[in-house]
Length: 258
Length: 258
DNA sequence: CCGATGCTACGGCCGTCGCCGTAGCGTTCC
DNA sequence: GGAACGCTACGGCGACGGCCGTAGCATCGG
Image 1 (spheres, rainbow over the protein chains, first blue to last red):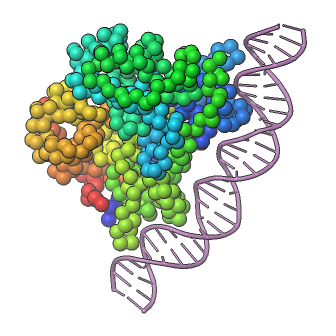
Image 2: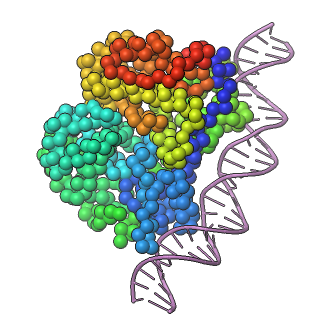
Image 3: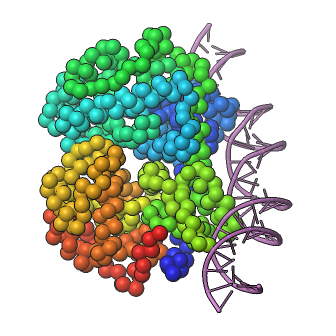
């Protein structure tokens, strides 16, 4: 029997480590904190406490644990402590879990309004996701601007031209080992969008030029009219069906970098 | 202040769902079970109990929970119940966590011997990972046999020829939506290997032809001499540094499909 | 048909951990 | 310098959940 072949070593290779990490993410309060940090911004302990729905003391404890597990980083600034995800790997792992979370109960979709906006366009750590992210991905793909590369995509000559037209240097971080552009599975659409240095730089540029602005109180973002025009002109075939326009009052006043 | 912008909606979008999934994976016993199932095979409750280091009754409870969370599937066969991962998404999510688990404690590397073999060559759900998987990925990449495609890679004409030479039909599941070939981040090497239908078919073929055989008692696999010869001849540039050869006694006698 | 086997259901024990109270340290503002 | 603020440290309370005992239901073998 194949049974007995398995019954001889007490295994436990990396299982326990895996459990530690998952356990850290497995508490509702901590999960909410991590989820909130997935937009790549840094938040204070108090904000995170409120988001998690617990008292600051409790949040402090959770944050300490997350720090110990190397899931988050802290940047001390005066009497404030800004917490952010430790890196893109953390965001990737969380996205992986979200795919499951959306799959599992099948019918447990996101709550109406906010959910719809999140599916439409949002940030995923440092790049765009949702239908906006997918629209960009698909347009580049369909136009033949992407080539296979070490662990992801590379830009073809025409792709580089597009990034230059948008004011970005496609070769800026070419020396880095990790792929500048790679696919990232979208938990809401179950289709890939673009992650990596270049995708982050693109998102950054879009905020800078106000082609995309942050929605208040969530990771959702809004493609502005100007943004739609610019992307449509620069990126042939770009499609991103707009919902009803969002009043400027709902936009985040300050990008709030940290 | 950006603070107050965040302090107005009681959030909790998909956070709780995320926490549920992570909590499921966050128990050592369950994590060990999932880890063991990551080779894509189906194991019985008893085997999983032993692997997790708990009594069968306890394991039964854990398995019920994992079932409810849609992380695993069961195939009833007589008085045996074979459990397996619910799908590739689960394996992907677990790999994402393993990347973190290997990162976080930095120095907490895998235990010597078994760890070394796992890093060398292993299965990741249904395809090859470790340096073997990376070797295949890199050879195809370097030879220009991969092109960017919807959510991953597609084979170029030369790539298809290679797969045909190995006895596979590269267009078999072309109608499927998901990419036939996509990069999957390797937790031990932190570099991509190939996942997807075609990668799974390749692995299957390799076992069938005894180019690769399963190591007893672990997810590690062994590239046979014949396999090395075949892959080397068919896949120009294929490199996979061998450790000392493994005695046939340590090989798994039966593929043990379910 | 009877016993052995594989697995699940239920119940009680106990540890772990999330929670917030109070208390204390450092920073900022007036 | 004093008060307000942001955050962390510690301690006790309470509950969730993992553990295995016994018990019960199916299947397979003789």
